[in-house]
Length: 431
Ligand code: NIG
Ligand code: FE
Image 1 (cartoon, rainbow, N blue to C red):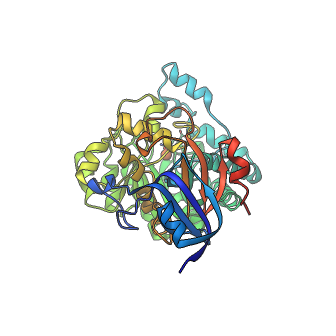
Image 2: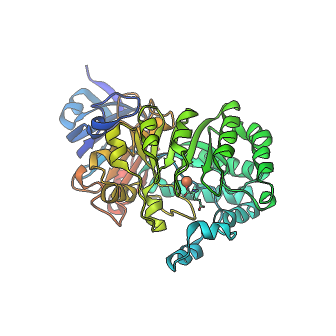
Image 3: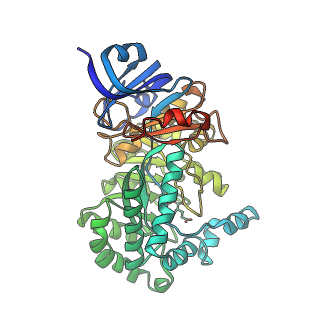
């Protein structure tokens, strides 16, 4: 019997399904290199969900579609999952970029009142409506780069009222853009000026007021655990309070100087430990034996011009579940492009094309507890697609400096098309 579906996406030059592994759970080691590639592939969609994937001729025989969308010439992947971003900011910081290019150090700029505190001043001065508009613009920017699921952090308010404003802006913007989003409270991003001389006082404010009151607005809590920012004991207190308030944990760990951050994240059962440029051998061992995902952010190291990329090869070979993310923020990494991050991961972290695809889809989805929903094209998951204008999946990472995303599909519906001559055709079906 021929079943009816809403839409068939047909003639993908190559369709990367990631269905050769289990639908859910993290992928490690060898499993990170199993993609599942269908030549002349098709995706059948009903109710915004994947019904089936397979060769075009086969799916055309099995399904009658109300609409067909021809993707010939394109490589199609599951939509990207960007599991570490900071989009709740109100102003860019290109002056600092030029100071760094002239030799200034990122942490030195921060200690002189620039950096995160400069973003804090702009967020405190912004209205909820303006901040919401800014976040919405950023979300569409991610969509234009093939991202369909995204984690968004607060962290430039640094007071109860301004962190609440940031989380509400993230929530309101998410309601206006079609991406799947998760929110993270990052009040522990820096010490605000009014607490510079009373750091313990800010940790108490975080634990006793901000976390309990703002927990309902967030899914996760994160801490910038770094010498000179939140030390180990302070990070631990914040994360323990967050856990008690029902939040799951993510940690900015071992970014610039080693601090045992990965070990701390694993000990607390965090969903992810992020950055890891200075992860220790013990940290790698602990991560590999846990379900805490190691989220690597090589765009930040690249953009800061630092030498210490995370030891991705050793981590993958040790069995860590590794993900990649942009770390999009106004200071240390101003890009929304997961494909650029994949290029840096291939060239600097020595990850393979298969690994950077897995690290941009199912592994970050697992870190966001969305692996049953997104990250692969198993039947039942959301029909989120990233349509790339590249000759083969091996050209992931290879084609860099432009945006290779031709189209982004969310829940079975095209939401962005970057190839204008095909637009009328592509959007003919748009509801
Ligand atoms: O992940 N490390 C802390 N937070 C951001 C940078 C924030 C900023 O400079 O505004 C990061 O790199
Ligand atoms: Fe970050």
